[in-house]
Amino acid sequence: MNPPSVKICDRTAKTLSLSNERWLKRAHGAALKRDRSSPTQNPISAGVLGSYCLLTIIQVGIEMGKLKILHIEDDADIQVIAKLSLENIGGFNVHQCLSGEKALEDVTGFSPDLFLLDVIMPEMSGDVVYQKLKKLPGHQNTPAIFMTARAQSDEVAALKKLGAIEVIIKPFDPMTLPDQIQTAFDAYSNETRC
Image (cartoon, rainbow, N blue to C red):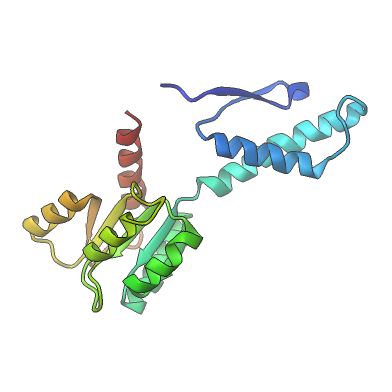
């Protein structure tokens, strides 16, 4: 199914194909807040509003295009490297937690698109954290990618059976980590749309 085609700012006759209705509402609302005058009463204002609307759509699209990742990792050094990689190279919005307990506290306020979990952690393993996160309202379908130093095929298979869309083996390459995550997320998104 193709995303709906929506006409934005009738006076500018800009038509965009949008896949996210929330994106449209946020962009249009922001544009209207910038110029409260009526476009029909002020023709110059109509053009300005149209320009604001289009620029706002681009700006909001860039902001909303950022994948929001909740990263749960107990090793502070790995957290630093992963955050630099994911934010600076990948352009993602990353919130990090040093423990599963902290992730369970922070998840609602952050509303991630994806969970990125270390498998082996002291208090609660990544698979247990993921099972608890999936039980929270609004996160039943949030995909997960696990990171582990254990590359045994039976462990990778067990994580995928649990619902992992990808398993990344440590040590990871910070230069390719964002691409690995984006590729796995895109494949998952395409599967769920069909």
